[in-house]
Image (cartoon, rainbow, N blue to C red; front, side):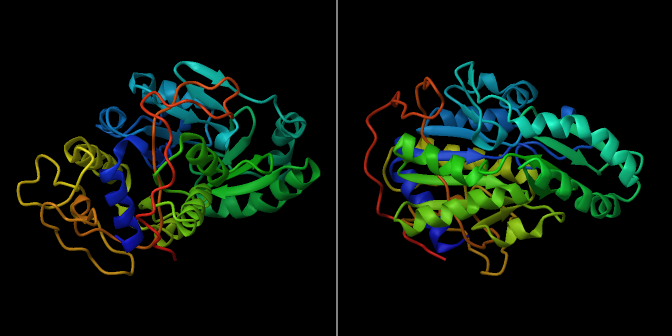
Length: 353
């Protein structure tokens, strides 16, 4: 865990009502599977989010999926006050209500052109197209050689994106065509400003999450505590390299979020305390590894820097926060908090990279 990450956790523990905790869905809360329509949350994920929602000011999911799909697949409607930003922030689901922009014209063109393009390019058996409404993703995970198929399709898909004023974004064995300006970093910054967050934590696993990690760095440079947590994947090592903390995939994310919830619930807005169930004073995540900055040792109860939350964690460098809001009419304006008025940014963490 980096110093900036520890400072973020300390700020969250001191003021949980203004903390923002946000996370990706696929590969972070839910294991990656061959069929995206079968991506269920890791055991305990929904319970951990619900526990966080009872204490943290805002809990959110920021995903490239349609927000409705994420809510349905994950049974996320059971999490009180949860905000789901779908299509990289273009959509907003909250309290059962969805707001979204009209479909970009280029998407219709791509939808019609993709079958012929894939056939002409010689896309191998197992290549699949996921229609996200405002984006289309071409997956190669089910092919005999996923990496070779991805390389084969990159150039023709790039030309198609250019011709339709879309961008081509790579991911874990996927190439996605979507409108420019839609990214998780923009969504995270806007949500943090709307919620008046005092600290921001974001969890992610894929290349699309790097924009959110960069937003964490920017927020931290501006004096807002932040922490980036990577769900480790051999398919996207860049994400682990950019994080403050690295955990072992979705199960590690679930353990981390549950431990963070326990710490916030027991903190009472004062000095961070060791979560229940850790009798030796060790942290929320055990067995996580360090990515280049060394390993943090178990921190005794009452550790002022919040490092009691993470033990033996892999470290590398970022941040995030969370607080709950009432629904907003257009999904973009400033929503009122269901707890208390927004406060000015907390100066506790300036750990910059």
